[in-house]
Image (cartoon, rainbow, N blue to C red; front, side, top):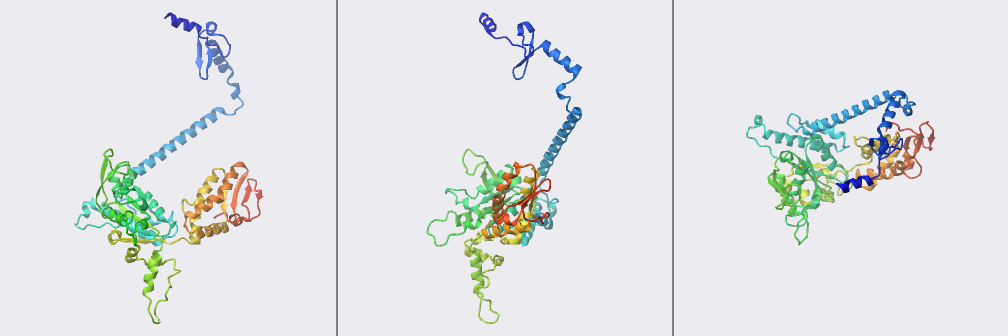
Length: 466
C-alpha cells in the first residue's frame, strides 16, 4: 500500500483545458475525448453561456433546426428503403419455383429478348425445353398427374461460335427462374483417378450454388461449356483420359443417378462430409463452338451431289454461314462425340455468329448493354454520354473483324473510353460527351459540350436518341 501511494504522489496532476488550474486547486476534473480535461467550474460556466447566448459559431447558418430535421428525415427514408429492398430481395430468393409460378414459353422468350439480341430460334427451342423440363419435374410430385406415364428428361446441346451468347442465355434463364446454376468447363474434367476434376465435381459446384441445399440443387441447371473439347481423339494410341472417358463418365449424370459429392471440396476424403444428390431432375445444358464441324456438314452435303440438271452444285455450301443449321447426330459422331452421349442430349440448338447489324443492337438494346453501363458511370458525374450512329457502326465493324463475337465489343469500348473516363472527372463544367466515327477510327476526337452549351470539337450532333 505504501508503494502505491508513493506512485500516486509522483503521478502528474490533470490540468483544466480552459482555466489551466491543476486538480488540487480546481477540484474534480472531467475527462473528455482527445485527452481534454475540464474542471467542474469551467464546464458549468460554459453551459450557462450556451443557455444565455446560444451558440455563436452556428448563428450564421440559416434554419439550422430545419436543416437538421431534413437530414434526419432523409436518413430515415434512406434506411427504410434499404430495409425494404433487402426484404424484397430476401422474399424473392425465398420463393421456390412451382408449377403455378412457372412462366410459359412465350414469357420466357420475351424475357430472354430483353437481354439477348437475335438467336430467335435458339431462344424458342430453349424456352420450350426448359418449360417442359420443369413441368416434368413438378408433375412427379403432383398426384393429379399420376397416370402411370413417365416423362423422360431432355437435356440440351447448344452449338455456336464463341461470343454468340451461349453462356449468357443460360445465366439469364437461371436468374429468371431463380434456380441454382453451376457453370463448369469441360476442359478441366478428366477420368476418375487422374489429375484434374472428375465428373462429380460438376454436381459439387451446383450444390455449392444452392447453399448446400440438396433439394434445391436437385432442381437446378448445370451448364457444361467447351463440350467439344472432350470429343474422342482420332488416331491416338495413348489413353484418352480427357476425351471419350469423360463422355462416358457424364452418362450417369445426364440420365439420372444418385451421386455422392463432397461438401465444400472437389475431391473426396475422410475429412469432408458427403451428400447424396439425385441428378434425375437436374437440367444439363452443354455448349461448344465445335470448330471444323461445318466442314463435316459440307462434306456430307456435297456427297449428295449428282449428275443431271437438278443436281446440287458442288461446294455450294462453302460460304454459307448458316450451314450449322443442317447438323445431324451423324455429323456430331464423326466429330468425336460418342453415340451414348448424344443419345442423352436429344435437343440440339444452333446459335449463329453475330453480324454487323446484330453487333449494333448488342451495344444499345439489352438491359445491361455495355453502352448503358458507361452512360450510368458518367451519369454519376452528371455527364451525358452519346454515341453517334456512325460511331456505333464503326465499333460493330471492328468487332466483326476480331471474330470473337460479342466479347470483342467490351474490349473495343474499354479501350475507347479509357482516356474519357480519366479526363472527365477533372472538369466539373463538362455536361456531355459525344463519341464520333472519327474518334473510333483514330482520325478525330470526341465532341465535348460544356454545361453552358459551349461546344468543343467539330463533328455534328445528330444522335441524341441512340
